[in-house]
Amino acid sequence: MTQAPVISVRNLVVEFATRRGILRAIDGVSFDIMPGEVLGVVGESGAGKSVTGSAIIGLIEPPGRIAGGEILLHGKRIDNLPAEEMRRIRGRKIAMIFQDPLTSLNPLYRVGEQLIETIQTHTDLSASAARARAIDLLAEVGIPAPERRIDGYPHEFSGGMRQRVVIALALSAEPDFIVADEPTTALDVSVQAQIIQLIKKLCRERGTAVMLVTHDMGVIAETADRVAVMYAGRVAEIGPVRDVVKHPLHPYAKGLMGAIPTLEAEAERLVQIPGSMPRLTNIPKGCAFNPRCERVMDRCRIERPEPSDPKGDLSSGAAIMPGHRVACHLYDGGAK
Ligand code: SF4
Image (tube, rainbow, N blue to C red; front, side, top):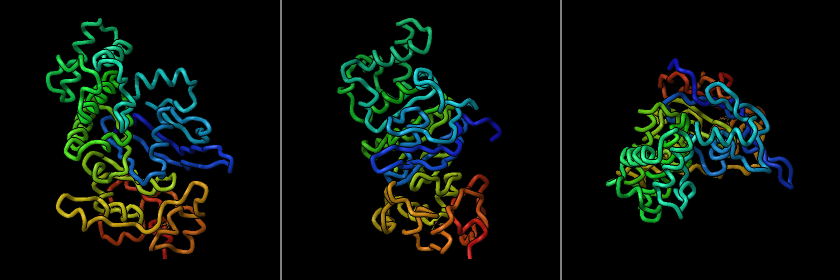
């Protein structure tokens, strides 16, 4: 891809001040997302995926703060903007889709009113033109009989239909970037697939960049172009989704990929990674995964691995695709 990224995250550090001291929730995360690209961000709860999303959209609440690094939207820094300016960017250039549609929808207002208000905030359209645009958007996200449903209240929609309305709302300002945080977790499996396909299709057509945050590797495999696997506030592995799913390198990513359920063989393929992710108060020195890693070496307990192009132990024999990077000493050329 030769285009410029929509979003660039550079060495992001997010800290939370607590009574026990400063906790580092994100520690040196970097990635780009290109126009029309879906970057899946996956990891266990507490890995830092949602905090990364919140940092990008400027919604880290105190006592949390961005303590280092940069976030750029179309090459311009947005991590240091005054709150009011960031609010405007959030409305216009960046949209959010959360797990619970009622985070985004006001239950007291008809969905049409909410859509029309957002459309009119961002365009010069008259009330009737904005209503027509809202109906078009509802149709585009697959709401049947949109000219009638536009006057319904959120509670009159099923969970899946409500999430479609939220997607219409997110698209109504024609954003360049969408953060979708567990957008399908609350939905039935069959509805999940439809919503995921919808987000993917709309973003492709519109050139919108998407950061899809989920703990579900199956959702990532279906939707994302690239995937970043996060562990304990850092990117353990990042690369084209097919390559990372088929040829995961990092021992943690290997465990996660083993956990992708398939419809036929869900039970057999669920792999458990022994142990659990460390608490932020107790991140191990060196590689944070070392207490759980079957391939741990002495240096893993001392030196922190940085994401880099893999060298050395590519035992799968696979040709690793460009842009596939891993933070693990097994692949930095120094493994014994
Ligand atoms: Fe395991 Fe060492 Fe790689 Fe960490 S750096 S994942 S401990 S082999």
